[in-house]
Amino acid sequence: MHARNRRPLLPPAGVRLAADAERPCARTAQTAARMMTEFSPHEQTYLNDLVARRTTSFTRPHWMQRHRATAVKAEARRLIGPLPPIVVPPSHTVYYDAAVRVRALGGSGQSYKLHEAGPDGRPICTMGQGTEWKGEPLGAGPVTCGKCAGTRP
Image (cartoon, rainbow, N blue to C red; front, side, top):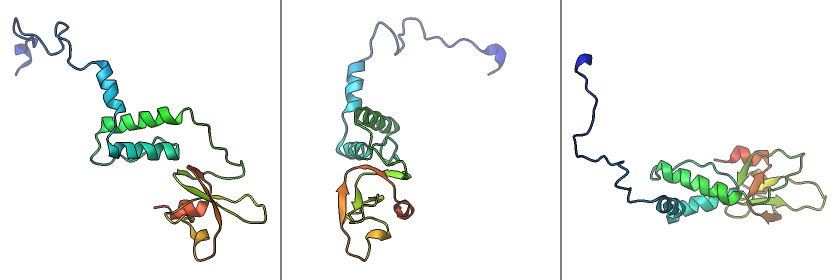
């Protein structure tokens, strides 16, 4: 179409548009808000993991729609907000947050690093492999072991 033949695109007389004020939308803001806080079992699993690790970033799986991933992140942010922060000694470097951690128990009174625990309850790094190992199980929080950070997939 040539520029001189352009006409404004207006609906024919008597036709209402979908965003017409006379005909309100069927879904209200309250319904939309409720939909964003109701999660499927898979989404709830992701949400629980995010809250346990105290983080809001995750890789969106291919089956999850973008707006649902945003809703999961927003809910995680809301749930993490009132939790007290986890205190880490200033001499330790925090590499990442893990859902399950462990600290070695020893008699020397040293400030041991915080490791990520594997399915067997031992560190995922080489410290807990091949020897008798005693450790204190911890909840979610920061990992300060550089070897765990290097062996993490």
